[in-house]
Length: 219
Image 1: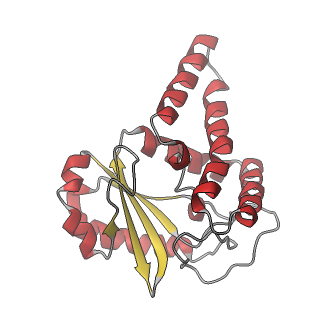
Image 2: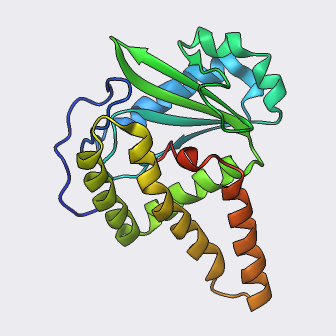
């Protein structure tokens, strides 16, 4: 749990499209995720091999935009593309490739009462996008100092770019990529060659994604 000054917790979910506003951690977020997970699992069946809570709302104590991010891992993105109707039954709207250029990901959003409440990211389980977002979430959960530094950055960026989501996302990218890079170049027990190979793997994965969309699900 992060022990630092946070914005006050407001309503659990809901933000105007394109706006950047942070709220303090809300203890209702895990329960809201579990409810949405049950709905998705019941509707998607075997298509979803894993449904994970990601982004800042998945890190206890961390401030976040009041939008819940969910990662649906699938074996084949092509099969998921053929099952768009299943996601629509759950209230989600898919973004076109023109709107969302990240390769290997389907991006959905769900609004309630005119406010954005859920983001849904569908990607193959072994993709760089999936692995690195899960890894970053886990690092924040286990390392309060890193999470506190991330929270400070987020608060600063939210004040600088309250109406520019892309600038807010871009401002976080260097911090996140640095955390991931350090994770791989400084393992506890590994030789220099192995550290270099892992670091190169991280960098190669990051380079596959558009600069302003590297980590747009990190809250």
